[in-house]
Amino acid sequence: MTAIHPSVDFRSDTVTWPTDAMRAAMAAAAVGDDVYGEDPTVRDLEAWAATMLGKEAGLFVTSGTQGNLIAALSHAQRGDEAIMGEDAHTFCWEAGGMAVLGGITPRPLPTDVRGRMDVAHIRDALRVDDPHLPTSRLILLENSSGGNHGAAIEPDYFKAVHALAQAQGLRVHLDGARLFNAVTALGCPPTAITQWADSVSVCLSKGLCAPVGSVLVGSADFIHTARRQRKLLGGGMRQAGVLAAAGLIALDTMTQRLQEDHDKAQRLAQGLTTIPGLRLNPAQVETNMVFFDLAADLPLSPTDLVQRLQQDYGLHLGGYHHRTLRAVTHYWISMEQVDRLISATRAICQG
Image (cartoon, rainbow, N blue to C red; front, side, top):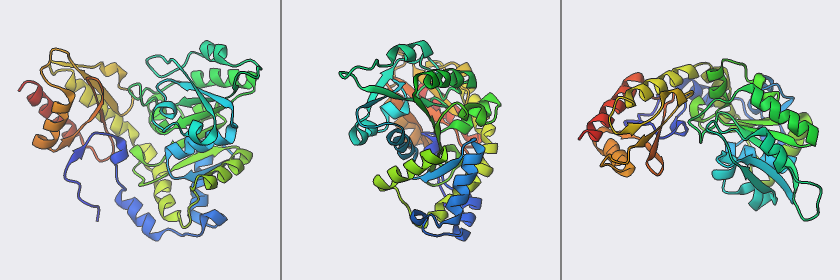
């Protein structure tokens, strides 16, 4: 039986827990030693993820951060440079891993309101062959853009960046932690975007509800190198089929229902716009994230609102920065709970 979770958690889709179907599959999973390549469920997961994303091979990793780091270490060497958006997860939220562990220099560039670097700006940022400078080697992209209202970025952007990378001899890695949310919003298959990246990582947890893990995909040669990097980072797992079984359901089933989460987010956004003192644009809500600001003249701090929601209503909400808050919808959030959050927020703001 699924564990009881009495509070309602809008902080992130990382708070999701496995479905009953996942728990049953985990209990029945065939397993083996994955470091020896002998776990059949892991192999099935890796192969299926690669097929879905149009790549030759896949690698099961413990997290999206690990997948992105492995990709960077596989594509670039010490002294090389990786270009990414200044608000990208790889730059802001991954502890500087590529620099700390790989000696890879990050080169953050400005982004627009949807998280896109200007392609001409990327071209201008490429280093010339000079011993004083790092070597431009890698471009890191993201979809959906978690730091930009969960924006779903169109395939043409990735096509343009890939064309530049191809012409200049660079590699492209896509942080697709919420790629399936993006393609759901765009109404296109994943391959419409992933064909323009040399490697892609997708999270199985978050909105897909698996308890642990991501899959990194790319060419067979790339995954061969990535497997070595995973071992170096201590990411080799043994009887990991227990986790991979949930990942298979995440890919097969949970990717097909994400529009429900987007509909909840849109309902939440529409409701919050009716509350005096809150500032947001529902048109920016494309996937499952709702960002909103507290007006400067509202006599309520973000901390006050978060604490009141939790203490008085059993609703968890996440602060973001300054007077901005974020709510994320997911499988374990119902429309009724969305309405509860709207009503509770209204009561507190008008209090």
